[in-house]
Amino acid sequence: MFGDVNELLERINAEDLVLDVGGWACPFNRANWVLDSQPYETRGFYENIGLPKSQGGDTEQFSEETWIQRDICDKEPWPFSDKFFDFSVCSHTLEDIRDPLYVCSELIRVSKRGYIEVPSRVIESCRGQEQKKMAGLSHHRWLVEIADNHIQFTMKYHAIHSQSEFSFPASFATGLSQRETISFLYWHHSFTYAETQINGAENVYNDLRSFVEQRYRYPNRILLVRALLRNLNRGVEAVKRRLNWARRLQP
Image (cartoon, rainbow, N blue to C red; front, side):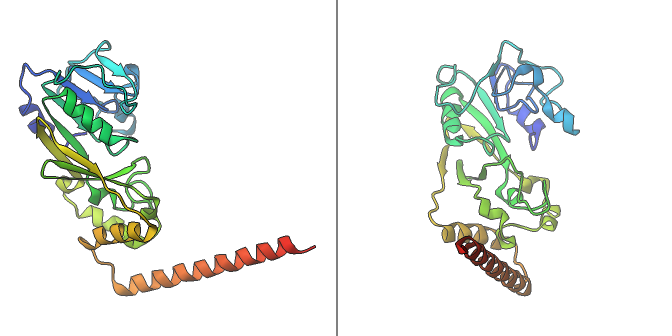
């Protein structure tokens, strides 16, 4: 899904050759070609969950012949020559896949310009989007931030679900505007991209905590109670482990 599909269409010229990368669930009908791991026959999956099955016009410009089913991360160059496309779109895909950096490199290679959209790191750090205690969506692998023609990918560490202060409460998401729930980039010729390198659990925790603290502060009393409960649970688990070992050592 696109944040503003009308603006996107306005930026595409009538004669432009357009590629949609990862558009299976909700194809961009203005695209002349689609590249996705899922088959043409099952396109429009979002219709099954009450969302639009396509966007970007009523008529599909692509066809079964121009729908290429393949793994976009397989390190084999996409089957297009350099700058083959005038415009490419890649919406709500990079956060899902195992190697978004490779996909970025191929987008730049095969396209003259394009549009990229991902969930904002803010909304991906909000609990309650899918499950009460889970931050963001379960199938998303990356926290993505876009600024100044640059895309930064940070691994979505499992720790984000483990402590409340590593994510925003569900109520925080309700106060976000639609624009705050996405990050996007219109790019020309090229853009830069990189993966954040974080080593050590404490550094991961600090990164998650500091991101949340830029926008939200949990009351100190709540943090204190949660810390006490965590320590209590750890103590209980330690006792259980000792008891289990003691039982194993008994003749």
